[in-house]
Image (cartoon, rainbow, N blue to C red; front, side, top):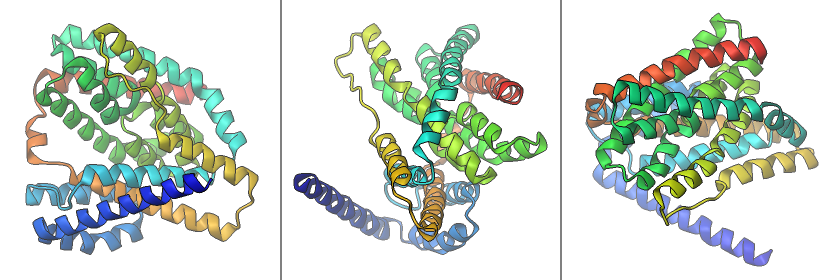
Length: 334
């Protein structure tokens, strides 16, 4: 225990030093961006809308033609994972298990059918084979994370990976802005919307953020089901490694998923005071806004210039099929 605590302390100190270094780098290289970020951070957190965070971050990045803060990708991932872990304290372990077990078949069916459909559409459209595989995996499992994970295994060029990530970013933004409106128009319940978001949206950040806009229960359902969907990345990586005879395979369960389950177990065993749960909920929501702001800050004009050709048509057509079909299925059988 002492050794673990010591390792945790060392890790925390290292992250803090890295954070301080990033802030210092931002102050030196992006002074205007830092001031603008600080100016908008307060109102964004007060409003608590992740969609606004994404839009403001993207607007700043495009206006300045560079990221307004240093290392946006690293810290968007860190803040998002922390927000997800905090959500675990709200979920009873029994509820977590019930949701995961009840919809594991739906997640598996979605992943396999979307992978198959994505590969077939790419072949039909005569899209680039590597980009087709990247987009099929990204749409089926976990967006940018899946793309970045399997790109080295497929020998993808930076331009191929970049265009796939650009398309996923754009579709995530569209989902974040439109799904809550569609859900309200269709009078979807919290459970139904959470399921739809967890299955039909690419990246974990956008899934959790979109569901959080709709409601807390939707966010709980979406987070649980989406994390189960993310785990499909493990057999996918293993399968690609076998086909490509790659020795660089790294199979592991993401640490934040383990911590999410641990937080749920802790909250189930220990009765936390209501005020603590309220603070945790507010902190999680604030971190989610920050995470989406940082995701938006990764946007660039070069990213937008990459949105063209058969790759975009393939990705949009695939998503245009699976999103409404998933919605209909959830409303019919969810």
